[in-house]
Image (cartoon, rainbow, N blue to C red; front, side):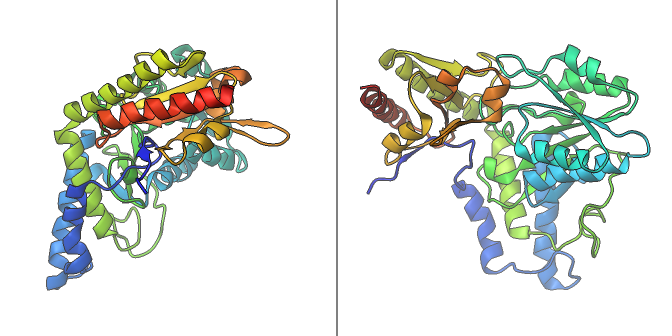
Amino acid sequence: MVSPIYLDYNGTTPHAPEVIEAMRPFFETEFGNPSSSHWYGIAPKKALITSRRQVATLVGCAAENILFTSGGTESNNHAVKAVGGSLYAKGSHIITSAIEHPAILEVCRFMENHGFKVTILPVDEYGLVSLADVEAAVTPQTIMITVMHANNEIGTIQPISEISAIAKKHNILMHSDAAQSAGKIPIDCSELGIDLLSLAGHKIYAPKGVGILYIRQGLDVPVFCHGAGQENGRRAGTENILEIVGLGKACEIAKANLAENSLHMSTMRDRLEKGLQENIDDIRFNGHPIKRLPNTCSVSFHAIEANRLLEEIGLDIAASAGAACHADHLELSHVLEAIGLPDEWAKGTLRFSTGRFTTADQIDRAVEVITTAVRKLRR
């Protein structure tokens, strides 16, 4: 059986061959603990240092600003719970957006249950946060703004540097979840003006279970996990050297090939969108037409149920739905609800996301499969 065409790179990415090779010695021979003072700790310790530098180069910061975590979710929790929570004496108000990943929205709900107030900013029809809304939401109690760099469903890129400027003006911490933007668009923590940034390895062809939290130089960050004091005392637990090495290599590749990979992804996405437009009536694309990730295509098919369409194409294409139709109700993604997409369009929304390994032949085949499925369902 031929594997389905993979168009869900925003969900997760396959391991890059170079990443697998970089990790191989730490599967086979270099099993030592980087905290060990004997021979077996030398190679892992050096690998940890190298990986930290590789990640720092991708996001435009010094190596000491990088804290390794178990992934984007932990990084977001650390930023909001630990850092935000530590500022309770100063203030108890957090600002976020309506289209954040659950790894932010659920953390904010947790904070609300522990004495914090959270303002959830609306977005426009393209998924953009208004700078005026950000400014208006600030109060003397505001201690943090957390807005994602780019949305995982519709690809819209937020004006993070401008939001950071507002935060800085009011002496408020700025955090951004950059899990989706890493390796697709440039990231420079200094230029963005942020204090904290989250990144997940499995979105950039590294393993699942590893990520980072960028911490601005001079920012006092509470310990999130207590123990023996690894990661310069900021996160206890023996470092996951195998996956950290994979993440480091993935970041090195992402930085070196950013322009080339971004162009390839956008070329494949545009080919897909053009093919769908030419072959299928009554479709619309979601997200900002310009300010969006180069690989993300959120498309709505009128008078189609997303889960039925996925069933039709499932043996040929791997993609994600923006809505789930149940027996008695329609369950829309919070992102589609936030941009005000009408139900008759939202219920037929799929997300296709291209990647490094997507080919033109795959895209052309995908257009054929999707077209056939839509026409069948509409009949």
